[in-house]
Image (cartoon, rainbow, N blue to C red; front, side):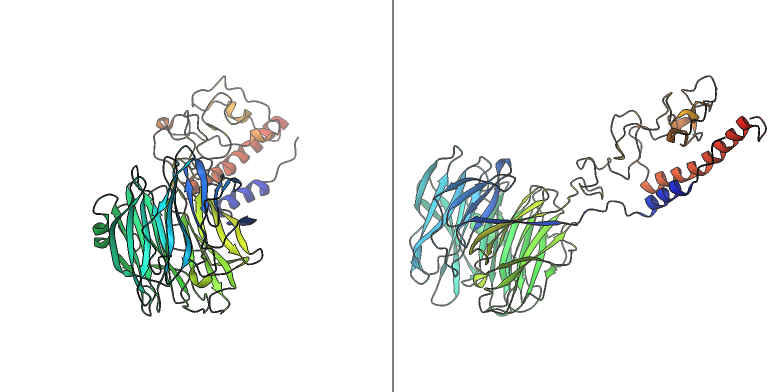
Length: 521
């Protein structure tokens, strides 16, 4: 007679499954990659084929692993600590569009140049963007579909207030396409991005009690008027507001980040320009004093539209935020809530807000480009976050198919569809074949297919322990039919527990029958 096996082990496994939090993801993983490029100010964006394009003192292309695959002398000459970044846009066709600054000074203006690298990889356009004017150091570029890219430059007056100029490249020259007044101050920043034929603009006016701005408009004639009409004001927090950033993800969601007094706030817009969060969400606070004491950060969203990463600078109190800790935070619910900020262990120079980091998202990996005080150049780090592309509550590191909401560890196995619905590594398990769930199932149970009613010997294998429960006739194979509504994970685990409690006494009776301890069956 075989010794009776204890239920303690299986019971503990079942109870653990009942109490485990479904969909729990691994913590985000920060990895410092090291020095990546010359220069101090930069722009970076994603291109076709999961390429990453960067412009600083030179122009670079990185592959999806972060390795530099192109390094070309088409960079920005204004890379001093008090200069603003150059601008970069990449078309769906692979064309690259740069706006860089050369020579001059902030009060006399710089020479601005537009440069194009066509889809074949050849630099074929290089011409001036207007003429030098005072404080024209803030520039932008946006690709919004086939045709001319939209470009931006600033102009300041005798004080810090100024104007933003819009331009269109016209096949070898730049054509002015309108001005925007009252939304920019010289000490802050403005940025453009394009997606699906729409141009998005962010700007800031970081005077005391200032405002951060977001706007959008369809590219083409009349863009300036559409941007002016769609202007949205953001005034969370207190004090000066500005130093905005934006990112348009693959789903068309626009992620908007800006600074207030020692704080950074977030909101999100859909592709039609509708604000998605009723109130701006504070992501960072306690970021320290500097000359303007406005939070400095950057943002990007993953392809799933719900996973968002942000970084910010925590100043040590220096006038220009020259010695700042680089912090990061992550949201997995579209920016509604955020993780507690984490110090990356890297130090950066904020350059009075002009040397802010940039983020680029590839899937659930966020590439962080920043000025690194330790190497006096630009460094790269990555932040890997498990995404939930199908929105079923199970992130990609536990979901075996993150493109289908009906396939996850909490789903019920569907008979006959050839899919591992519940992510347990098996397909169509327990679906009533003659092999059933082990040799106990050979007993007649009125569930087709069944055989001659012979009771197979109890060989003590794991296959002898398994559910042998009658099921209603309309359920057929004992699990839901293809197309039926899925049952919850807790029902499935509860059924397993009941099965253990019913099957083990049956096995004991069978053993007693064989050994003469009990009556016949």
